[in-house]
Amino acid sequence: SQQGEEDPQALSIQEGENATMNCSYKTSINNLQWYRQNSGRGLVHLILIRSNEREKHSGRLRVTLDTSKKSSSLLITASRAADTASYFCATASYGNNRLAFGKGNQVVVIP
Amino acid sequence: DTAVSQTPKYLVTQMGNDKSIKCEQNLGHDTMYWYKQDSKKFLKIMFSYNNKELIINETVPNRFSPKSPDKAHLNLHINSLELGDSAVYFCASSRGTSGGNTEQFFGPGTRLTVL
Image (cartoon, rainbow over all chains, first blue to last red; front, side, top):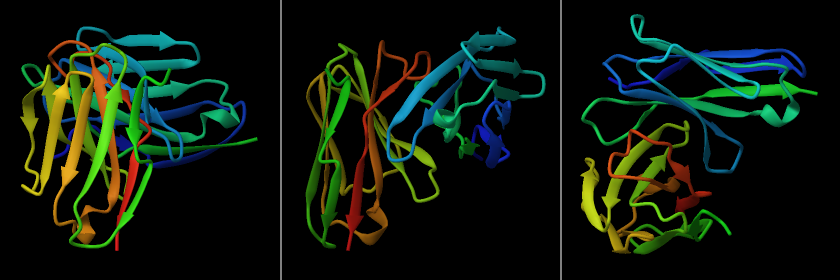
């Protein structure tokens, strides 16, 4: 089964609104990471949250991690048109030297 | 001053041909990766090299062969291309030896189309 399944998969919001997307996973993890992919581009790392952390902020981004529910959320506050992209979560398990990526959420911010 | 670069950006070729994609990183990272992203944007690890040594080799057809001449370069050679190989291939790199513990830096991708 696939680690890191985001929900919902497509989100359309007005500029200035907040966007929230969720990610669930199935096994114990060392850390969880969020990446952004603009159309036709490579992935860009946004934030890494370790298994012993519950919340992390970076600019307009807020990530939470609930290891008891095996889930994470990414909140983008005061969205901008430039935030239009696909957002992926990826998990790293202990003793595993790879990231397992989820399917991605498409976020469209309407100016 | 591009961190992770790939060439070519687009590759259109006929079935049965052999092609290569090149990747270079100037970040001084020890570990490099190849990922395949399908039409539904699902990203799957194919290979990983650490200091020129293969450390991840997922279930990928033998037609795919990575080569790392030095730790800044990781090339991907594909023999006998098939229609199903059409995808976007991403190269990435990271510090250290454990690919999951740190952020990964991705190249811009190579869109391969097999006709």
